[in-house]
View 1 (tube, rainbow, N blue to C red):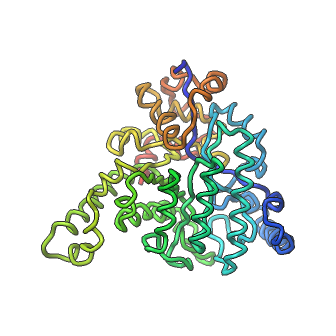
View 2 (tube, helix red, strand yellow):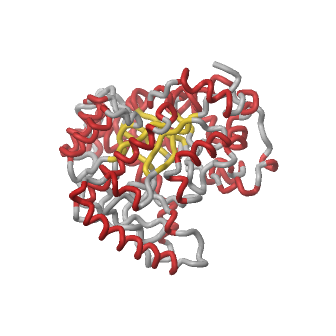
View 3 (tube, rainbow, N blue to C red):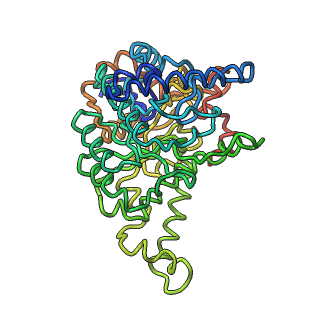
Length: 431
């Protein structure tokens, strides 16, 4: 490769404007959509007026609860390309970020929207997002890997959607929704979802699970509600990993790839150690509650959890903090992908170059290339030969990224990104 890194973000977000989804809906839903959109806009306006002077706008909150810098960054292809090029990032994996048709609006910035029992319309709205996403990806196909949404309430329809996404080149794979206890859906370890895992495996589509999309409703009437969200949001997404492991999904589909994105990285070694310990006791103990309660689940597992992880699991590291880089060897250098979280307000944009130097300064070129380029390109099938000339125009040089930067030289506005946290603060909060 050349003098420049090919910087690919494994975590960015996009979505149409509310009205922009209408052309992508099946026509039989248009009248219902117009009624829904009028009501949703009125409700969001009331929330906007109620929160005036109280902080960030609820109109620019993504579906995973993260605030967005400016709404049109979700759907302006030209602006995204321009800003990402200026920031040194030339290709991205695209997760959803806006309210799809018929979705209930979020009550607060961090509270999950209430579940709707109108499954038909909800699912139609998600399919509309996927079709909008395909057009958005096709505006820069070599630079975008789109993640298609499915719906746990329609397993058969989700299988058809996975097959459609694979046939149409949405190589970002499948976004696996969460199923927290207060949802109307069975947990992810339910056998009901077997056709979904089988379809993803058969089409070579990776399964993605993103932080923020699996949380229960924390309520809005308690002073600690938002604090509970911040304390627990990543755990609710991390738990899907052991749900699939201990229900045998990775055993039955050894080529199926699983990604936990924006859930941190420091949790992985400790979690795998704990899961291995439970597995060993469930599998090999003669007596004890672990064997009694867990023996049936692990009977068909031929590998320890850490071995499944090494074989077919990944973490989309938004953000890979400076004090977590040393954990990469323990986590698996081939299992980690860097992400910028564009266009969220806590993302590294527009200070990605500084973030990369803070995290990777002093690291080897091979390790940095693996984390910024090789792993994400292999999993999401980016063509590095096609991206190399673009990288030579816009991406930072390998020498630049390898040059450490002092925290005192980080711009004040950049310090809201978790990847820019001071060293002592990072050590205390890396969980």
